[in-house]
Image 1 (cartoon, rainbow, N blue to C red):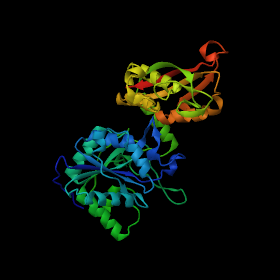
Image 2 (image 1 turned 180 degrees about the horizontal axis):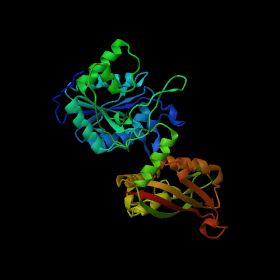
Image 3 (image 1 turned 45 degrees about the vertical axis):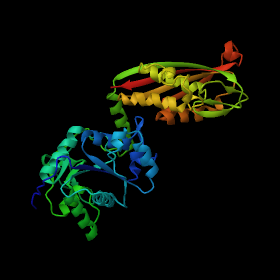
Image 4 (image 1 turned 90 degrees about the vertical axis):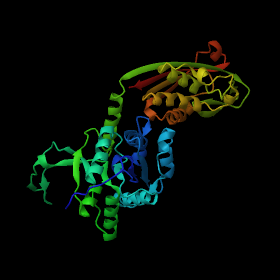
Length: 405
């Protein structure tokens, strides 16, 4: 087999992100690429890491035919400048090999030239680093077909069907292969087409496809942190890694009060609760979301809800308060941080919060992109003392824990 040389333009680079799988080994919760990881979907993190790592590159994601809504939700949090560098998604096939081939064909239809560099990456590897991406691009241009690999530290045994050890390979010659796998676009497209036309059995990765087609494949240094999320334990380790990367822990507090007025319901934590009175406010008067919003803003020392959404501004009249809380959470994310936990308390005689507590927790978790076990909602009375005891209104207290780089 001969090495394949290339003459790729340095700015002519593309990512093909494979996100069509079901991820059954990751356990319950839907396809793993769309699951939340420290408040953001895995695919969101992966796309952002790739495009940030190669500012001149574009990307196409290969998705399952049933996942368009999930895909749209995953790319929605990305900055507009990054979303502008995404092609429309391609639709995957029955196997990963089919999905990659479909994606390559879609890139060809979009006008990607044979001399371009294409990096094929698993959506479930969100920790791919900039240096690894640059090494992959360089390898694609210099070698035509190359993969990142890390040295094997365990002793490997080849075993027979009866579990008898057949051979112990020299681990010095072994590498555990990762993605992104790097190719000249024309080379890997032709190789995948040839495998599909031949009806070849499923090959384990795109390097194997190139090898099958007769090309030399080279290995360049991978990254130990470039882990693939496969099992529930992988997600736990990934959460821990992200927390360790955010050592600046801050706490903010929030307090809000709204008086009762005319109405037949109140909004509490984004949930409409039937009541014989309403709450008075410029927006929807969701006292609980207002308190949580102020707590998040306090944790990053960025004013209060009135500074960001002045009640004197008519555009916020009757506005849904989930917009305010989402804005505060986005401000944390813009600083590279995340909200780690929220603890909130409602103070009122009526309505009774208990029957609605879990719905309120779930709604707050949804608005803030938090796991449910990171949202606490409690309720108490003031023993008929004060304005809440006289049923003149509702008060809310909130604490938010935020982690920043």
